[in-house]
Length: 198
Image 1 (cartoon, rainbow, N blue to C red):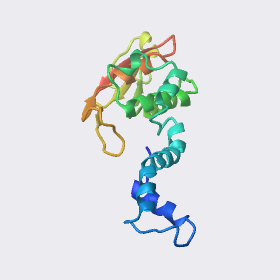
Image 2: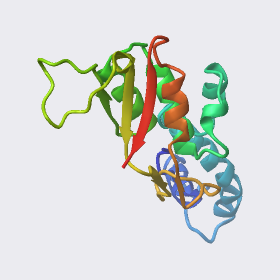
Image 3: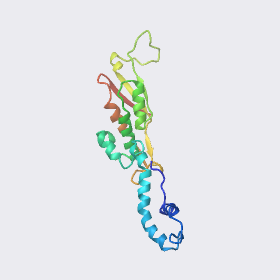
Image 4: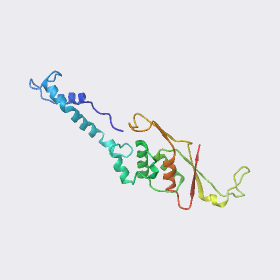
């Protein structure tokens, strides 16, 4: 997210305050000095505003102009990114990959999904055992010990937000393809994952 910038008029007013005092340095808006300085201010304003946005722009969660470099560093975009991801989805994927420390625990997958922008829970299954089985419990065979399920909202909707989205972003996009692709690529080799929505 860029820091709100200055206008050319604000830059000109600030510049005029730095000028020496005297008759050779008039500050009125109807002077030649004002006209000449006004011609230089749009460029100066662009440089000042770009410099003020530099710090937020180098962090992956708030970047805009160097997002392509972050993605290239992480091998993105890849098939997990989907057809036409929004800037926010691209940032989330970069942050998730940078923060990824690896793991196989429930907490790891829940946090990884949260970094991607999804709120999930995980269900683990266990084979049926007579001493633990209740009347209404499902009876799973031993292979279910290697199955787990990601529970997510039926449809994850990403809305357009004036302070976060950009001109070419869709007003809304939905789907969980990025979640499924990223989780599936990290599933421990001896397990299988299911996805449940709603």
